Length: 148
Image 1: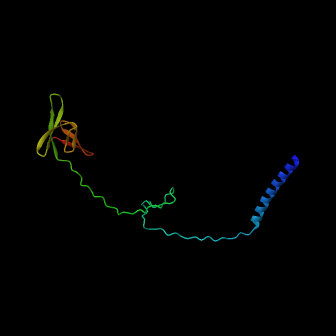
Image 2: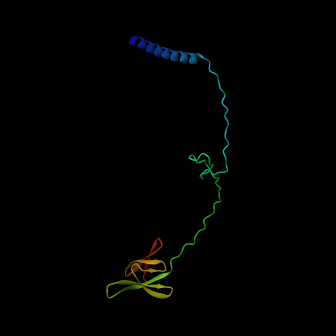
Image 3: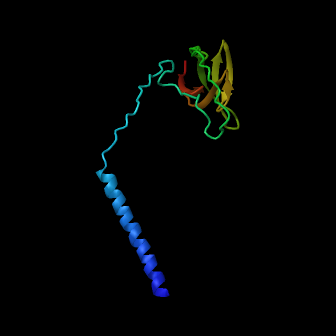
């Protein structure tokens, strides 16, 4: 009984292998039927510039909603800002106090003001005080003002 079952299984396997071989040979000998494929050249849209982002694509995670159309706005030229000028300061000299604090005498708009290191006058900060000059910072620029 066991041998008969094994024989049937082997016959089925041999028939399957030879059937596959026969099908491939039959497929290989048949003449090929040419199928024409319709090709269409797509026109490129010149309405969107090449350096801008195209944000009107469909959301791949939402199947029912369509993407909103993006309205291109005209580019507005940036208004050039007038550079802020540093106020005209004149360094008159240096004074030391009894406690050893060093102050610079600076003339601004006709009046003399004493400034310590780190003090701010009209957006100008005193960085360093020396007998011959002071170093001030105005915005990102550093200036050296000599004694007059």
